[in-house]
Image 1 (cartoon, rainbow, N blue to C red):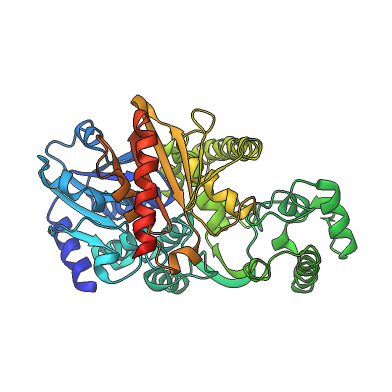
Image 2 (cartoon, one colour):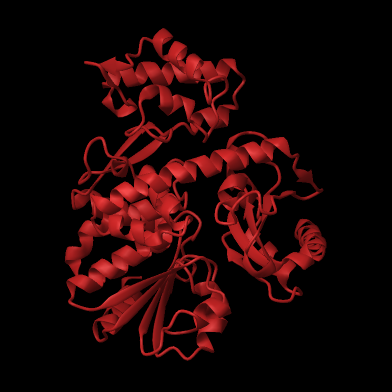
Amino acid sequence: MRKQFSALAKEILKRDNFAIVSHYDADGLTSAAIIAKSLQREGKTAEIKIVKQLYPETLANLDLENKNVIFTDLGSGQISILKNSNLKWFCIIDHHQPEPINIPNHINAHLLGYSGNYEASASTLCFLLAKEINPSNADLADIAIVGCLGDMQDSFGRLHGINRKVLHYGITAKVLQLKRDLRLYGRISRPLVQFLMYASNPFLPELTANETNCIKFLESAGIPLKNNGEWLSYEDLNEEQKKKLVTALVLHLAKKKFPEWKIKQLIGEVYTLCKEHKKSILRDGKEFATLCNACGRHNNAEIALHVCLGDRAKYYEKALNLLQKHRKMLREALQYLQQYPLQEGKYFYYFDAADNINDSIVGIAAGMLYSSMLLNPNKPIFGFAYAEDGYYKISARATAELVASGLNLAEILKIACRNLENSQAGGHSIAAGARIMQKDKEKFLQCLNTAFRNFVKS
């Protein structure tokens, strides 16, 4: 495997005047930052261009003439488009399912024998490339892990494959710390009451969205809320206090008939970025990833890039403001979905949010329905939202159990879109997306049903 990374690193080091084209989510942003930093350290020039998706018209508008182009976290599903373009030179580092077309300078998790769902993200692949460009780039492992966490590649409670290899590089470089602990979001940055009150993955019965109950729960468990007048976070607790809190939470959930498998998922690996301030949202890998997603999905990707590249002043403050906006939009999206019933077909659930949910977060909203336990996770879910120029953005989500049974959402969507004009589809088996014309919605649903029916037969 190292041979492919070494060969591409040599090709890159021969060149200059780069453009890095990457996706607007946490994995894409951290990938772009890793490549940009490694090129900068070699004295090479590179501009970064962040896109929602790599559609033909997007490529035409990027002004890549005379550039050496590095595509990160996209490109593998658009090889036919890139191959027929007028690009001077390009390479791809990606983890999405590739088109079956052989091209040079193409690094993809699947082609290396790894799952692009949970064993390798674009950011961890970019890290291995950066390390071949110069071994001193080992200090970028923390940003790489942020990227794979943003793609939820730790959904089994730990990292695997290439991601795990990069994690250990980070531990050796003293930029990452690994431990087993409670995996609720906000363990470092949120006061204890908010830590429980804002829990959404999973939703905690009688605690999520109920401040009074959270205070009573913590007090009855003997957990202090403050120390010298300052609110305590989960990370501020000593080991004995943490054990008391976890035990009380497990007993509470069992009493509420919470699924045993969901309770077990509460404990797993957590990843700390050692260079960050002890109270910073950036110190926890998943919180850092959410901040990147907030910037990218609200048309301010450059802010996240500055933070990934080291800014902890002006751009960091802007990123925190965007994070608040992002959280508010997600709460409103979930409230909308709770008011309007899902459509349930034989093979899948779906909802059409039209313009009530921004197309950049419709996939996150669909995923939140699983964690909120508002639907039975025995079928995948498809979310529709209006996109630009008369299109629908479609985001599909499944569970690990469905994928283990053989479901591949990316392939299903590609089949469903096959005969639809101006449509594109791609992604992973567990999470995928498509773009169709709004006028083709009913035809798409028919094609989707047919694709599932054939999948079940096979």
